[in-house]
Amino acid sequence: MAGLKIRRVLVAGNWKMYKGPAETRAFLATFEPPDGVEVVLCPPYVSLTAAVESGLSVFAQNVHWAQEGAFTGEVSAAMLVELGVQGALVGHSERRQYFGETDETVARRVVAALGAGLRVIACVGESEEEREAGQTELILRLQAEAVRDAVGEHERLVIAYEPVWAIGTGKTATAEQAQEAHAFVKSLLDRPVLYGGSVKPENAAELLGEPDVDGALVGGASLDPGSFAAICRAAVR
Ligand code: PEP
View 1 (cartoon, rainbow, N blue to C red):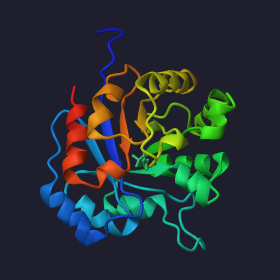
View 2 (cartoon, protein in one colour; view 1 turned 60 degrees about the vertical axis):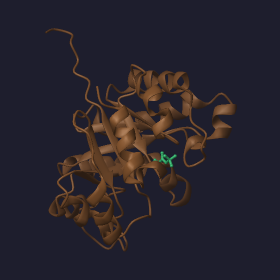
View 3 (cartoon, rainbow, N blue to C red; view 1 turned 90 degrees about the vertical axis):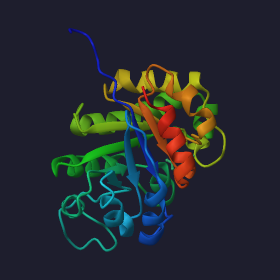
View 4 (cartoon, protein in one colour; view 1 turned 180 degrees about the vertical axis):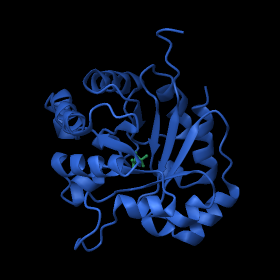
């Protein structure tokens, strides 16, 4: 039917630097994701193979822009594809804050990952100081346009709106704040937008109930199979 958009909800668990292969297998032995929502796991590199064995969609937490080369400690998109990994997070605020990630390097990583056939969740979001200074839209514009100018509205690209002040702090954006930011990001780049920042079983349904919240990127609460499954259930449409 003309004009009808099928809304596909995606919930991704970013495990950060938690869970080696044994803990990954233990998680998967009890994790029961519901039908009706796409679930993605983003474990550390060393646990990717253990996660891929589960048959769930698995994304890496980063990816380098070169195919190979003298880049100690980095992993290329082709290497991830070889492992059966389906995609990568790019530009997470912890990468921007602690590892010198910039809008330029984010764009290069996105280009390489999509070029290799991976899917990408590219993260954008303002800091507390930026929000208080009234710069939220400016920051979102700079970050989202860096990605858009590099790859356009690529069909394997998803954006995650993650206000930095809400990540791992227990402070969550209100559903209205999330909706407002998501609608703004979509006005720049018409791709699905996930919300990330202290999503928990208790607040997931309200956030995911907003019309432009197309899923969630979950950090801390994705480490426990019970709470991650509860968030995934809240996303079922
Ligand atoms: C994240 O790591 O992307 C994240 C949103 O973390 P948390 O859910 O713990 O705030």
